Length: 128
Figure 1 (spheres, rainbow, N blue to C red):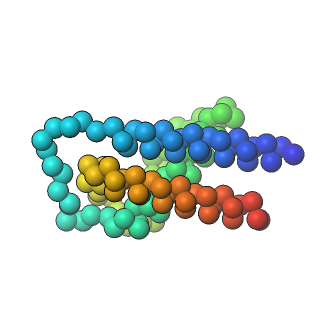
Figure 2: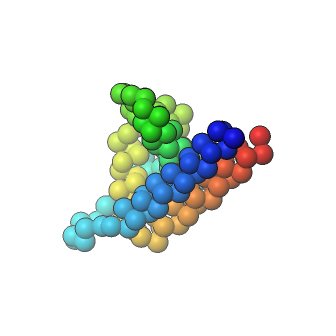
């Protein structure tokens, strides 16, 4: 019973954080600066996988905090593991996200695909 309650809490936290990410990604400061695609732009399909993994990591960190655990350097370790897995740097991720965020349609499509990916992960967990 406790596992089910914990799962539902994680699910709610995950959905809340995704909504916050979507809202924050839609807020842009309109200046006349255009961000051009960096030479090492991360492909959309890969950025979707990365963002889904980031969301899972953030959810795990929030869960640890909610249980009273110190997370210390865990966030940096999680991000480092994700970036290592995809063979990218933090700078490459940041510059790619800056490029995608300037196009609201593109970033909304990306986050919709992230939501879909997270739903697939959730259903896989439920069937285990």
